Image 1 (spheres, rainbow, N blue to C red):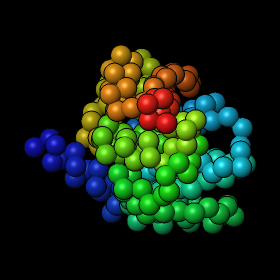
Image 2 (cartoon, helix red, strand yellow; image 1 turned 60 degrees about the horizontal axis):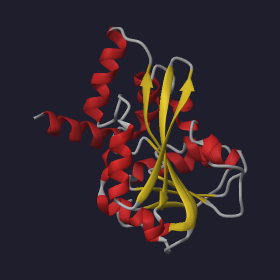
Image 3 (tube, rainbow, N blue to C red; image 1 turned 120 degrees about the vertical axis):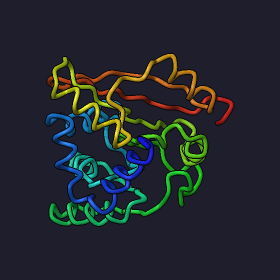
Length: 217
């Protein structure tokens, strides 16, 4: 029953109710959402000629950040509603980038075509073997896929407990994942993983950086 409710809430938030996503994200993170998204930047390095691929771009906030910082990008999401919202957000700021509608498990992209791939709060798909196989395929030899896995509010209290409950319903993670588990899981699927914690005011973001193991180069 809970899984059905979770899937229903997830579908609404990313489709029929996509216009509420930014507000919901701000509420459930107590205003920390944008800091968590931006925690990816220290691991990207300076802008290069090659484009950065963002998986599951959502409403486009990270695209605005990336383009504003001088990165070339390609954005991809399965939700047509998110694509429309992101496109309008970029138009309003006079920013332009390719926005693709596609499944992260079937990327319409050439092999070895991106040296940098980013994703913030990828829900369960980051642990799908078929997605990880696609990730290996499109990354260059020395490329890196950097994911913000979760953001955790520090401290306790009834409000934060309620917010953690909302996270569970929508399929998001509100607790840090164990480093040993992450190393083992991604290692089994051909990646070396580096895990970092990024401090925000009153919260912490967990970032994982994946590079292909030598056997997959």
